[in-house]
Length: 393
Image 1: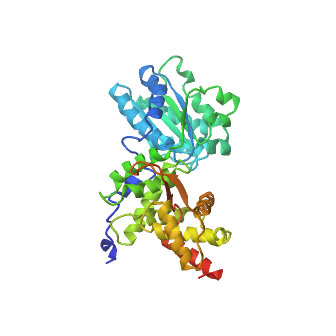
Image 2: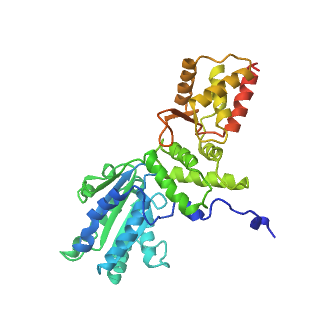
Image 3: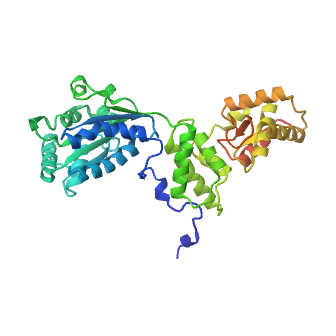
């Protein structure tokens, strides 16, 4: 028998809640965007009209997950109002031709539909028959629509916007939600653009650190066993992800840090597990980057790695004391405080450590230091090896 039953998971209780495909019941810090989308679409139910909306924003800002949550909730609301509703989500990076997009939509109604042998016009008519037979209003979500347009042009999108033009005042059957990182109208030709209202754009701004912390706290409560991560460690993940404002990246760091801790048979995620998870994606701590540092900048970095160990953050006072010890270890006299502070700012500029002002939980304002990119033990080894190669110690 394989020994898999012996590999007990002590940290992540529900991995599905950390999946990119998971759709939470409520979306943290996206109420405004949800309300805006509802304002655009309420006439689908109340007026029998078709609607089109653009969702735009950077990766990890919640566009895709909000579109799914909106469709699920809007379908329920519409059904309660006596309006038959349904929706289909199409990833246009995976399906970047008109035929493959239409096949995905038709497959929603007919799982046995053949994947070839029909023209685009024929598939549109088959889709229309399914929608009319079911007497529903269908919302089609085209995620990463820019990929489809770049590969295949705007013909399908134009056809979908004209889907209800023969209704002659009757009830419309189709609405569209288009998602891309850049405003969709930048990709559209004049004819297709004329069928859209530019005001129907929902902009998704990058998450800030506080918003990311709230999102990560929410996912932690859903996915992890209680008591397996401290708030300060979660704050470190939020700090790292806030550089891009990317909730997906933050959730990925949380998941990978939990997996690393579990593989070490531990019951809690430590800051160094987060740093290891970050190093798995991209690390700025390279041989060439370290080689470019002066001896005392390396000693300052070594001091930080010595002092931080199992902590997420340390004060500059703690780091400076450790710098003095590191200097003594390698036979050097530590530089004055002003010069040391310059070392820290330069290291922050290189991305080798991170400086930030303290927030709640600290008396007054002090500067906190974190290592966002590499485990402290690994950094200590790298720096010691490099200092030794320079003849110090």
